[in-house]
Length: 113
Image (cartoon, rainbow, N blue to C red; front, side, top):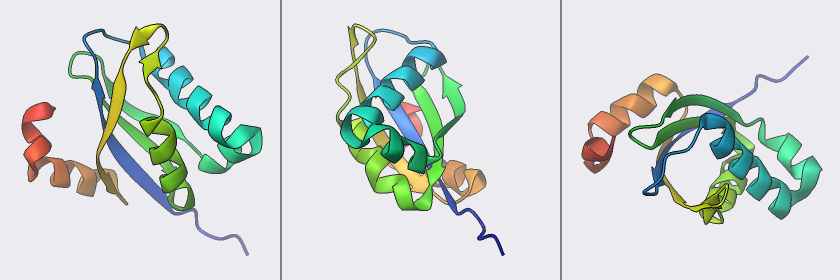
Protein backbone atom coordinates (compact mmCIF):
# COMPACT_ATOMS: atom_id res chain seq x y z
CA UNK A 1 0.00 0.00 0.00
CA UNK A 2 1.33 3.43 -0.96
CA UNK A 3 1.81 6.09 1.65
CA UNK A 4 0.11 9.41 1.13
CA UNK A 5 2.58 12.14 0.19
CA UNK A 6 2.56 14.84 2.83
CA UNK A 7 3.39 18.24 1.44
CA UNK A 8 4.31 21.64 2.78
CA UNK A 9 3.93 25.02 1.11
CA UNK A 10 6.50 27.76 1.66
CA UNK A 11 5.65 31.43 1.12
CA UNK A 12 8.78 33.27 -0.01
CA UNK A 13 9.81 36.89 -0.39
CA UNK A 14 12.53 37.58 -2.96
CA UNK A 15 14.51 40.57 -1.73
CA UNK A 16 16.20 42.32 -4.66
CA UNK A 17 16.14 45.53 -6.67
CA UNK A 18 15.95 43.42 -9.84
CA UNK A 19 13.13 41.27 -11.22
CA UNK A 20 13.53 37.65 -12.26
CA UNK A 21 11.63 35.24 -14.46
CA UNK A 22 10.19 32.18 -12.76
CA UNK A 23 12.72 30.05 -14.69
CA UNK A 24 15.69 32.08 -13.38
CA UNK A 25 14.29 31.84 -9.85
CA UNK A 26 13.79 28.05 -9.98
CA UNK A 27 17.21 27.55 -11.62
CA UNK A 28 18.78 29.33 -8.62
CA UNK A 29 16.75 27.23 -6.16
CA UNK A 30 17.61 23.93 -7.87
CA UNK A 31 21.26 24.95 -8.15
CA UNK A 32 21.46 25.72 -4.41
CA UNK A 33 19.78 22.41 -3.48
CA UNK A 34 22.02 20.43 -5.85
CA UNK A 35 25.18 22.10 -4.52
CA UNK A 36 24.28 21.31 -0.91
CA UNK A 37 22.66 17.88 -1.26
CA UNK A 38 23.57 16.53 -4.71
CA UNK A 39 21.25 15.02 -7.28
CA UNK A 40 19.87 12.40 -4.91
CA UNK A 41 19.08 14.96 -2.20
CA UNK A 42 17.43 17.24 -4.75
CA UNK A 43 15.26 14.37 -5.97
CA UNK A 44 13.97 13.83 -2.40
CA UNK A 45 12.55 17.36 -2.13
CA UNK A 46 9.65 16.95 -4.59
CA UNK A 47 10.00 20.69 -5.22
CA UNK A 48 7.47 22.55 -7.38
CA UNK A 49 6.74 26.22 -8.02
CA UNK A 50 3.06 26.87 -7.26
CA UNK A 51 2.80 30.66 -7.52
CA UNK A 52 5.18 33.39 -8.65
CA UNK A 53 4.57 37.14 -8.71
CA UNK A 54 7.38 39.04 -10.47
CA UNK A 55 6.26 42.53 -9.41
CA UNK A 56 5.85 41.71 -5.72
CA UNK A 57 8.82 39.36 -5.54
CA UNK A 58 6.58 36.70 -3.99
CA UNK A 59 6.63 32.95 -4.58
CA UNK A 60 5.01 29.80 -3.21
CA UNK A 61 6.95 26.54 -3.35
CA UNK A 62 5.64 23.04 -2.63
CA UNK A 63 7.93 20.41 -1.11
CA UNK A 64 7.61 17.15 0.76
CA UNK A 65 7.22 17.52 4.52
CA UNK A 66 10.49 15.67 5.16
CA UNK A 67 12.49 18.09 2.98
CA UNK A 68 11.32 21.42 4.46
CA UNK A 69 14.51 21.89 6.46
CA UNK A 70 16.68 21.07 3.41
CA UNK A 71 14.79 23.53 1.21
CA UNK A 72 14.95 26.31 3.84
CA UNK A 73 18.72 25.86 4.19
CA UNK A 74 19.18 25.89 0.41
CA UNK A 75 17.04 29.05 0.07
CA UNK A 76 19.09 30.78 2.78
CA UNK A 77 22.29 29.99 0.86
CA UNK A 78 21.14 31.86 -2.27
CA UNK A 79 22.94 35.20 -2.68
CA UNK A 80 22.19 35.83 -6.34
CA UNK A 81 19.76 34.79 -9.03
CA UNK A 82 21.53 34.59 -12.36
CA UNK A 83 24.16 37.32 -11.96
CA UNK A 84 21.96 39.73 -10.00
CA UNK A 85 22.21 39.93 -6.19
CA UNK A 86 19.17 38.62 -4.32
CA UNK A 87 18.16 37.00 -1.05
CA UNK A 88 15.15 34.81 -0.36
CA UNK A 89 13.22 34.90 2.92
CA UNK A 90 10.75 32.24 4.03
CA UNK A 91 7.69 34.10 5.32
CA UNK A 92 5.70 31.11 6.52
CA UNK A 93 5.18 27.37 6.00
CA UNK A 94 1.86 25.54 5.91
CA UNK A 95 0.32 22.19 5.03
CA UNK A 96 -2.27 23.62 2.61
CA UNK A 97 -2.33 26.58 0.24
CA UNK A 98 -5.54 27.84 1.83
CA UNK A 99 -3.98 27.88 5.31
CA UNK A 100 -0.84 29.48 3.89
CA UNK A 101 -2.81 32.41 2.48
CA UNK A 102 -4.75 32.70 5.73
CA UNK A 103 -1.50 32.86 7.72
CA UNK A 104 -0.17 35.54 5.37
CA UNK A 105 -3.34 37.63 5.64
CA UNK A 106 -3.22 37.52 9.44
CA UNK A 107 0.50 38.16 9.75
CA UNK A 108 2.91 41.06 9.74
CA UNK A 109 3.98 39.99 6.21
CA UNK A 110 0.70 41.20 4.72
CA UNK A 111 2.28 44.53 3.71
CA UNK A 112 5.17 42.73 1.96
CA UNK A 113 3.01 40.89 -0.54
